[in-house]
Length: 312
Image 1 (tube, rainbow, N blue to C red):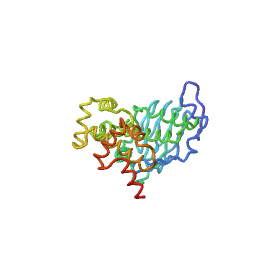
Image 2: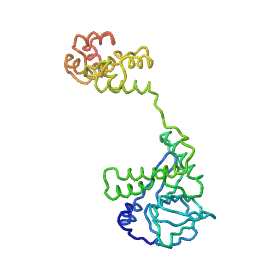
Image 3: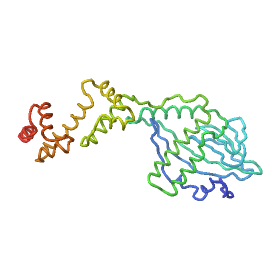
Image 4: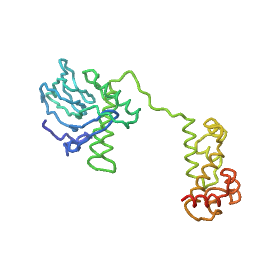
């Protein structure tokens, strides 16, 4: 199609400067059980009165109108087009495009081939959302809608990051492509969310976060209170979390196990004095470590070190 640079005040006009820039990238996205292959990704211009006769594509084509007006015939029905509208043509859908005789029209176009490509390691929630979106794309009505979910800025953002190439720009472009697919579905979707996002088991989440924090800070003067503060819950609530996960392993018991694991590791690795190991592992002194260690393992830290050395 013939291109033209529109006058100022049209934010998408910058996309005419390097019109094929996005199309030079081989963009392939694994989304759930599907591969999304981007074939075309650009802004085009229909001069006043331009006609694109009936044709179809083997892929999905997303059409967005950021400026101007015209009309489209989808199969056998004609619809007017104006700024802010969009429509989707799926594989094999015959369509005809025509810009207004006086005003002309711009279109943001994204062509994608969608192929089933099972992946054993996909996130099940993401896979469910991908499946829902793609099935809906196949079933969308053949009529234009308004860009109510603001997919058009995704085209401009993809162009900008491709042009400036900041860290992670290829990933950013792929995210914009997925956003266009999702926002297209939402423009037609009046039934609300079908697939619910994953919800945490807050009991397990709080326990796991607490243990993770304790492992990272075992050498400090950790207390039930300051770990509870990190979780934004009360100490009593945190006590209850540990009790519900495993009644035999209280907060203090888990913290003691974490510290003893560190002591055992250091005893096996070298000849650091036990007094120093005790302090580095968060015990107040070597005497207290001896008492805890003997109760847990039935021997002193020194005896444990000798036993480990003999087993090598």
